[in-house]
Image 1: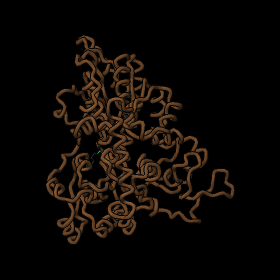
Image 2 (image 1 turned 135 degrees about the horizontal axis):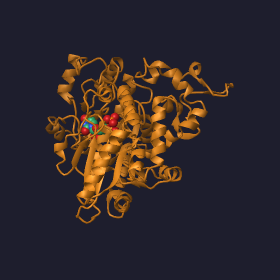
Image 3 (image 1 turned 180 degrees about the horizontal axis):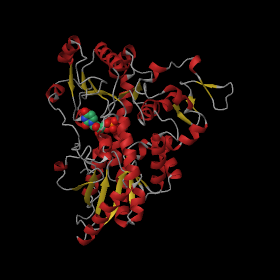
Length: 498
Ligand code: UDP
């Protein structure tokens, strides 16, 4: 490990970690577990049976399934049902009714660990498992939170009450309903005069989707709409409010980010969250590859990639959960074909709504795939981004993907779907300026032009240069004396002292 801070190797303290069962949450939690293990802590991972981890990849850890152990349990049924909306409601349900079951499990584990002379010193849970704070309190166990998003995202989430007061969510109610919730904003409403939104005072003043948000000037009004939160009373709004409350009540926050990336945001977090914050990321740089994939990565294209020119291949992946409507998918296919750039496309089965996998692709496009591209179901993403042939990453801007791209100095094309993704996309394009935001949705001409702009256009060298500069900053932060290195030293000392 590049930046191991060198704690004594004698394991006398155990840390229990509890990831949320989604790919983008499992990866950073398992990486954090590896980091803490390297620093001398023994590790237990507690996990749901739903989206269970491949435990055999981690012989050094102890695993224990919790919460959804009964196959007839309504909670398990909820978690296993398809669709992100349902998955979210499953998570909410477990937050509401998991307390007693988890308390019993942890109580047993605490007793056993004491008998073994290796006490559990800390519980680290995903921030979205907010119910674990009261469980930990009742057992007099310290709970730290892993927040798997950017600091910027948490600042925006913490501003939801203020934004709601200002009427920003009124428009979300009118723009999104359950039927068209997955359609892109542009397909539902065009940002023209007619569709402007009245401010809450009901006065003459109107707000356009393209306007900046004075309360958070980085954002445009449409970014708030794209988060798909309807306000504090919306189930997602409630989940986030509980998450923030119990994060403030925790013993500390561990972030998968680094100081130089979000310096201004860190000051605000210090002010608004009165618990220690540790920015020790990017986690995936501590270990070469992720073993925590829920799907088997396809490596069959690697020799093709090895033969491509430097910076010439567009890597396309929209993460583990996003889904696209058929008409948008066809825009993607045509834009990609017309761009004439080589590509590697991760197309998950079920990515296109109502479709199994590749059946919507025409023979013409499949010929093109033979000539200048590859399509796979799942890729070893970090390896692909680190490859010299990777020229740009067309991404949904999940935080892990965003960080992985930044770490390798790969410019982005940003096509966010929901949640924190539109926030990360805005940050990447307008603050870091290492990406082009396809902010008007899925439209073939715009797609073709964005691909060209990032891969071969006049501006591409400037974007690439800024991306390289950020990559350097990551490397420095991980070296002895760097911000992430020093933050890890503090974190290890802090956990040991709990
Ligand atoms: N990933 C991968 N192979 C793929 C696509 C994604 O290994 O083909 C990994 C990616 O490296 C990242 C995670 O899956 O670590 C996705 O997390 P992210 O936060 O970017 O998005 P989410 O899936 O949560 O929407």
